[in-house]
Image (cartoon, rainbow, N blue to C red; front, top):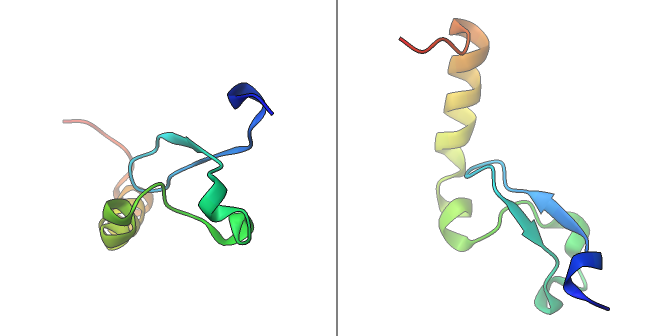
Length: 60
């Protein structure tokens, strides 16, 4: 299997795509974050989503 055919997901924290890794083969469906760092910062992403839903995504 070449790298371009591997499944991928978007990390909800850094919003970057990440691809399947052999260490995730048993629980790929449960993997949500691309790294331990992003998993540790998951509360920041959820707070930003709540803020954007209430205030709109307005730069200013």
